[in-house]
Length: 230
Length: 313
Image (cartoon, each protein chain N blue to C red):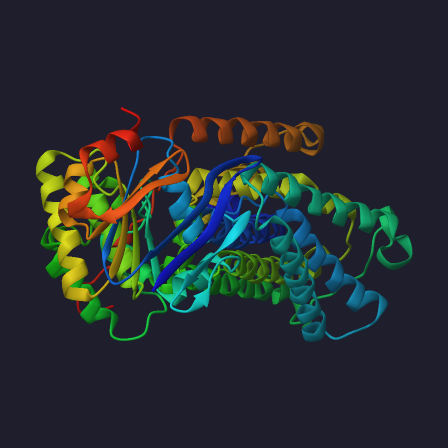
């Protein structure tokens, strides 16, 4: 479904991602790593928001590196950024609607599905997204990305800054999204324990390089420590 | 009663001209609302797009003796094309860059009009432009009614945009452009499109202003127009369609109608010190509002009014 080969990218003259090779199938794929490992940069590059300096990214049999972000979104890649993941002046409903702006199919049905997935949003639908709590904001951001008919969801540290109760609930929802909607998910996380509970496979990223890529259940503490440089 | 009537409407020509100015600022303010308040494009060159329309209309009418409707169409096209080009240039700039670039566009328009004397008449001026119809004493009033109608249509359109999927896309672009870039619509094309459309509206308003002043001079296109529009919009509420109207009534309405007509200022003061003082007060007002009430008198968007429930998507 998704394949990155020899991917290099970064900012100005600094290479943040250094020659990454990995592929993702119909699964939940966790990218783990400490601050500065390059997780956010990698997701930005996949979404087309950051150009590659070398390498190639393919999705659904098509090369997507070098094409405009909106075309990548139209192919079915939805991004849930770590910060500023909603449109603050729009209501919750409008955030979902703008996500499904040109998606095929009945938007109403899809909004109902999102509300079933995140029931807390139903009571907040007329509230401006800029006034929501951190957890509610993350739900809206994920819902908005799902409205885009996403086949692959890129979730950048979706539980960062959330209370433990929200974190537990949110990881349950991530698994549910994958299983009920057949959406592949690439999730970056610092909370390795929780991420590994929902992921099928994981990659440990350290300073832009893949330290290891294994089945989530096979990832050892030593491999994690090496990646996190503990 | 008669004395009150005479006091209020004793100078109908001044009152009508003041109301023309008010309507012009309201119309431009509504269009700027769509650019700045909705899409986040800080256009500091309103006078340029308006002036391009005004002078295109004048040149078509005076130099080429073209009829009213064709001249108005040309004025609209001039504003639109200028907006299209400007939109393309500024689409990837940051906020500071957009302000500087749009101000530069207005300056280029002004300098072009001043220097291309053969076409525009330069500082000597271009005229005469007449109303497209003549119904005697009531022509002024009829034109004012038309301006009211045009402003009403613009207000209706702005409110409609707020409720539409297109409006949601514009608001999304204006409030969080990095995220909007990951939506399934091209942000750059969206910004260029809104810039072209609203600038075309500014050009059309410029064309409609031609018959009011009869003679065109470059001094009509100074930054004072832009400052008046921005002050009105920011004071009233840049995120609300009615913001420009409320702000314009409190600024232009106060200075260009109420004080000019009803406060017995000495003529010398009215002609020289008054316009400068007005600009100083507008500038101070702008700073005050941005510091203490950045969303203006009407406040932020009321999106919840546009959400009727789950079934209406």
